[in-house]
Length: 91
Image (cartoon, rainbow, N blue to C red):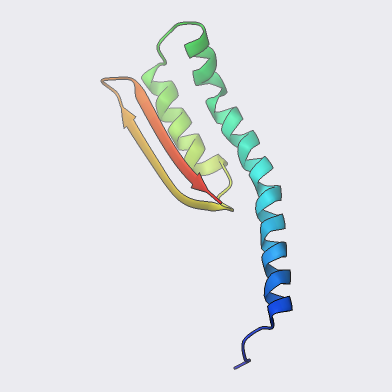
């Protein structure tokens, strides 16, 4: 087994990791905007969102938003109140 990495190696790997996170953050933000677009347009028009639109958005968020950089994901839906709460915690 190899010994501990040098400080320089650790810094280099940390910089590489942060570069990947920064690149993926843009892709994640673009996907988030695409998933939320229909619901936001409905809200801006002053109409409540359809339950089917909320369900579709929750499915799309879980499958289409990249997981790189994600620490945790929580998706809560309420049919009766027509609410969707998404907590996507990222680095």
